[in-house]
Length: 149
Image: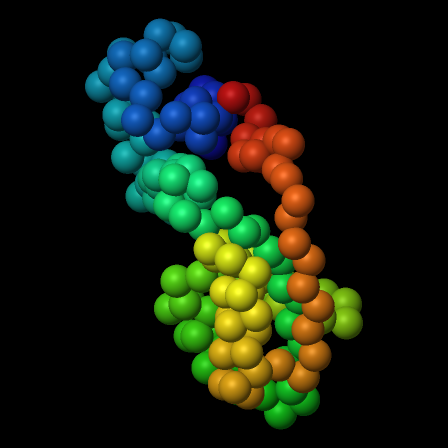
């Protein structure tokens, strides 16, 4: 991967639907050369997917919460990961260091939905203890854009 690839990734991170000609104009390549680089980056697993950024308010999901989870001592970690991968409220799941097992990012429609989510985790036997933090606002959403953007 070179500097041009880094710039292409940054441009795609800002707008995955950006035209190949526009990207090429920014990095000094033809649209076909840009397309070939994107295919190579995808084939190498550097670019894993293209996503859609939606407005949570428009989707009636105004509540953003972060949930720290400590699995039970003899908990089934594989079952928890399967649960997390298939649960529609979970936007992100991170295996972490320290006193917690996982950090979950959830997006739901109400505070009652946060409570229902936690109740479901506990009923499934995935929680020895948990801590939940609500995001009051996100002043810099999507701020993590790769260098070279």
